[in-house]
Image (tube, rainbow, N blue to C red; front, side, top):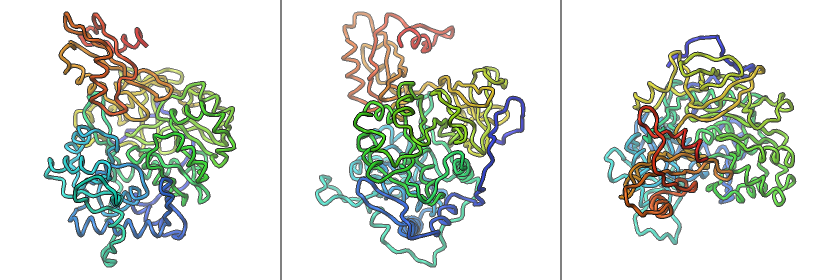
Length: 544
């Protein structure tokens, strides 16, 4: 939706883009940067201690692009979906997919079969890319959908593999198959065309694919490349976020744009291993979520400042940071640059404290100022723009903002204001100096370790139990995991079911992130709204 110019109570960035990226697509930017100092290292796979130069990445990604077009007979705009963990192979696969003119997306590797099926049915990918641990699951899913033309794997299977199947060809092998050098690559793409999807889910529980155009992604890279925000240099080694998140895609693109190196950890749930690799590979910059910083704060006696002496620039976001953790990071670790940011998949990076103003910020509730290419306004329930120091819904405008969700007219109609700003679903305000504060969220989702959990799914499982009459699931704060699900139920008359039985019933049917770690309460009756809906706000007030 086109953003209309409205100047009343609009917060704009006081920073201008320093280096305009005059490219028509992200793949044009990538190819151009890979030709510069091509013998320099680009990727480090920390798990395998394997490094790739820019030249190796360029050759391998274009070989893969040629395979997708010539062997798989894929056309521009078709979708490739990775259901795999982070790796060097995955990163090169992203570049190759974009070079072939495909739309890239990634489903988290820990997803259940039903979650994968839901998203595959929604986005209709022509190619599914798996890894050895989920190859049989992905093959079973692909067989259910005739639009899936090809199944690939990232790495070559292990010699001692327990899977008794014919493995799909691996990207690792495809990278070594030389292309026809007369074939023109990359495929041309335009600013308004879709480059990637970021898979998400709304409070309705329905899977959604967030459209990210070339313009969206280039605008994010431009904004963060400002010297006051997060400019990277050839001396930097960045820790990669997961590629299924917008932060992971940003890490990949910003690293390439800045001629830096990207350090990739295959499984980042082991926090001890994360900090070990920061130490081992002299990583200089990282986006660390609050759960990772909580771990650091609680282990500050064993993981001290000297152990992480290479780490100069730390940005955190995705959830609120507790005052205790904030004080520990600021006082005990004293990173040269430490800031809290605010963003969302539908946009990218929205706010971050400029480096020149770090000394003016000593508050864990401040998420910075608006970055270049972005505007913010705060609105009330009637859509009216609000002045400074007045809380309301944060709405975001600018070139980073998605055009919407894939084939989801109902959600798209609710996503934007009349003048084209994206409704974040978050409550906040700005002060007289235009620092942004986040107060809370109005979205009915639960953020467990940066993984979005849908209450509707857990409610549906509980309602399938014979003793459950009604149910509601909310998120409650957890210092280790950001939030965890907590359930409430009313039961049929005469039932003797216990909370533990119901918790076990749910936990046996869901993955790690969806377990009812917040507990379960059996109520006599639910608080209800005037419309006879369960009042979740009242549940939070009464029980959390």
